[in-house]
Length: 146
Image 1 (cartoon, one colour):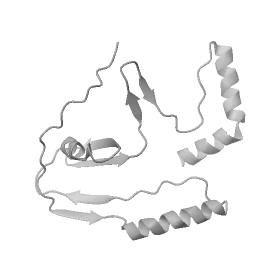
Image 2 (cartoon, helix red, strand yellow):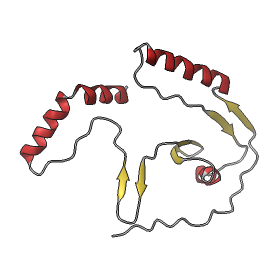
Image 3 (spheres, one colour):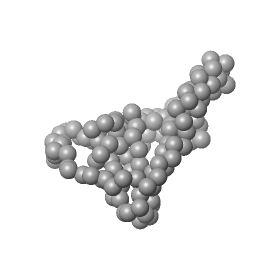
Image 4 (cartoon, rainbow, N blue to C red):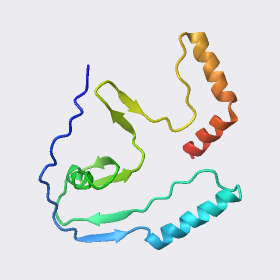
């Protein structure tokens, strides 16, 4: 069944002014972290790193996380939102998509250590053993799991 991937026009969403906004990591500190990570990679002490900046934004009234994402939609890459309970949400933007939808399929990006399924149980087992024997895939899996 084909997916409808046409984008609706942006909704006219307006947010109330934030009562406070605090930068978790300044640009200067983040840039220092990038330089430090690059140096550690050159020295072989670091293999993978994710450096992000964060902000804590508070409103005096209830705000729907989806409204915030709709405001960000045209300005940033891929958006995500997690709202574990009413009154707080974790949302953001990433240059890497978690998944992509086209008319024919849903495409996900493998993060680390994967193999395709085999055509039989025996082939599945062979592929699993190949994966477990791969030092590259085991390292990626360990780094991702950390």
